[in-house]
Length: 160
Image 1 (cartoon, helix red, strand yellow):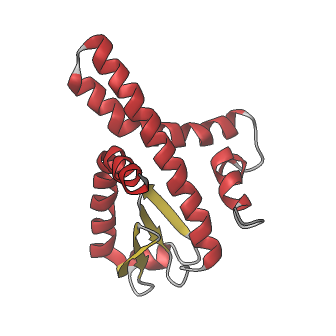
Image 2: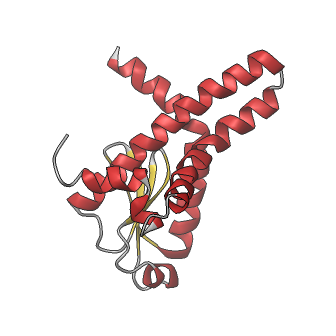
């Protein structure tokens, strides 16, 4: 049953992961140092000798989609991995929510293309809304004040 659930989750996340893999491919071409898979997440580490690697020097990582992460050079450390894995879980939840929403839209309206576009784009809208909400709350830092970042930074305070 665990295997079946994993296949269903990966299938639901596939549209976003396809876009994430395209982003990782571009990053790899213009500044990637090493491609690898960690905890089922496709990852690339930036090369400090490239413009992209220098631009993001000291930056921990960026999650592009439920299973695609970019790490700064030398930043593939336990604390950064835990942080980005929390974002991966958040993207998975957003992908599941968006798939359910898209199915409902399709059933009610019969517009499959519109439903599919909602399914693909909704996770990034949901994640972006967290930063917009932090800005609207007048958080001192929009980045650190977003609930998705609070959760990700909290992952290093205690193990799940």
